[in-house]
Image 1 (cartoon, helix red, strand yellow):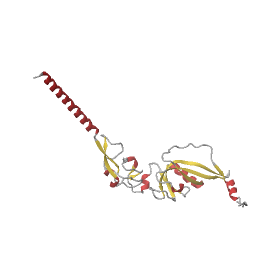
Image 2 (cartoon, rainbow, N blue to C red; image 1 turned 180 degrees about the vertical axis):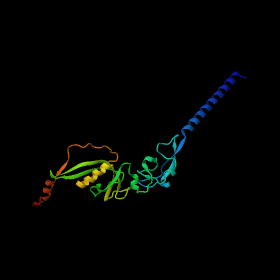
Image 3 (spheres, one colour; image 1 turned 135 degrees about the horizontal axis):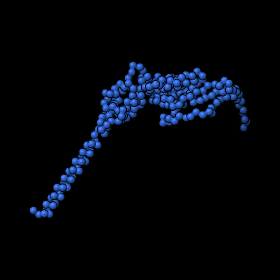
Image 4 (cartoon, one colour; image 1 turned 60 degrees about the vertical axis):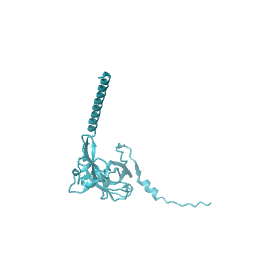
Length: 244
């Protein structure tokens, strides 16, 4: 047999074997990278404080060999749990943002451990004209009359406080003037609110949802001289008619 032909056949067989080896390796790598695990996500937007039902959920295949920490593999694990936050469509459902269904109210189920819920009466001013909604964060301003100085003194009593409910609703989707706002507070913060209401008035200040910075209190306090304000109010306004 021609030596040249033998060399060509050997080379072709070698290249073929090499190509098969490469293809097999690529297929094995592809099969490894395409391994998935089931993970439950929101099928629709799910609001705060509702019992999760089957239609709220769907199962997707998560790329990899393990699922993210705190997630669920089946819908059945989530049925009747209560949401402590809003979930958006296709968002992972995680255990830290859920509460077990209890025999109490839904509000009691969404209160964090070691915290308390306290409701305060509000009007369109205190309630920021109805623009406060559950899950918003607010600052609480307290105003009281200093009788010795005859001045009304206002200070920031609490900062970055979570709103749990407005009126008796833990879900609101549009601005509306309400009669009460329920705040999530530590026990000592709740005591401060009650004391401030006994001594004077409070007002809520709405925060940007991404603003978590707490301002350091300073010695300077803004005051309003009550006597001067009352004196100004007592002044008569005279209408002057200027001839053309």
